[in-house]
Amino acid sequence: MEKVKVCMLGFGGIARSHLSAYRQLEAQGAPVQLVGICDIDESQFGKAQATNLGAGTGPDLSGINLYTEDEKMIAAEKPDVVDICLPSFLHEEYSVKMMRLGCNVLCEKPMSLDSDSCKRMIAASEETGKKLMIGQCLRFEPSYLYLKELVDSGRYGKVRHAFFDRLSALPLWGFEKWFQDTARSGGCVTDMHIHDVDMIRFLFGEPKEVSCVSTEDVTKWQVVNSRFDYGNGTMIFALGSWDEAKTTKFRFSFRVRFDEAQVFSDGKKVTVYPDEGEVFEAELESKNRMAEEILCLCKAVLGEAVSDRISAYEAAKTVALVEKLRDSADNNGQVISC
Ligand SMILES: NC(=O)c1ccc[n+]([C@@H]2O[C@H](COP(=O)([O-])OP(=O)(O)OC[C@H]3O[C@@H](n4cnc5c(N)ncnc54)[C@H](O)[C@@H]3O)[C@@H](O)[C@H]2O)c1
Image (cartoon, rainbow, N blue to C red):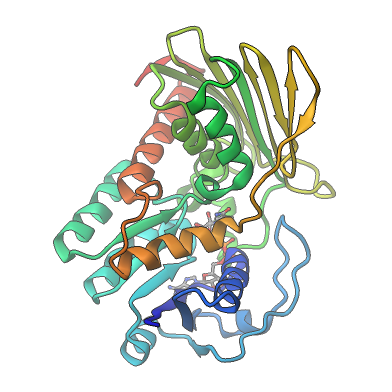
């Protein structure tokens, strides 16, 4: 079977989750092979990297060639795909560079820090003919896909209101403290809250108006409270925080009120509370969202028809909506039309 050769660029916090996804895909016999990893900091290859997901363990990199120079890796491995796990302020530079070197690109979220940068990335993809997908991984997360099915099918009627949250201590682990620098991370709104902004677009489409209030401490937009008005009586709210106590664990949840039921998720399970009938726990597919996003691009490279749900065009629209939230927050929560 033909396998898509992948190289990973950046081996910090999130790359460890990507590595597990490749190991899982390879064990399942998927048409994917991780052949090389590059990080400018060689010590990353031996480190058990702690993140807001936990302490981490030493990575098993057997069978993978390791590099500290990206061009050397591309010349030696000639990958079909480069999986970019670099800090967000480097996403544009390296996505464009890798597409110009002839590789298809899977780039971590956020696509980039602003819309103009996203446009340049899309232009490079169109110019080179190389595929560019963005790891808005919740679009493959079973709990959110269950919710999407309820929204799309109208099984419990229309959504009246919904709340999404995603809460973490300030990320302290990153390369040269990039998370703590608003110019390089875009603060919580651009880095972490973007997951919920993207999910709200995925579930409900484009809002008519948005507003946002935020606090500023180490970064701008460090705690953000956003409101999405759909103009039809449906109101959606989202809370993002990078100001939780260091001793807390990263957590996220949603709570959605349909006409005839309420649906809660604590980030692990989804519970349905119908207005009439028995409360029940939803049966969720057991799928790894990172493995699914990798497989999506690899199948596209092999010429299979795949969902466009993690296309660069979609991700760029989410960054544009985040920009509106930032504008609103900078103007005391001013309501902004979309
Ligand atoms: N999908 C998710 O749920 C999720 C979760 C966490 C982070 N992320 C995103 O993943 C990206 C990376 O985050 P992270 O936590 O892994 O950051 P990190 O700082 O831990 O890792 C970045 C790595 O890139 C390396 N690096 C820096 N410049 C380089 C270069 N020029 N060439 C090669 N290597 C270089 C660093 O040495 C470091 O090891 C960010 O965009 C972040 O927003 C996504």
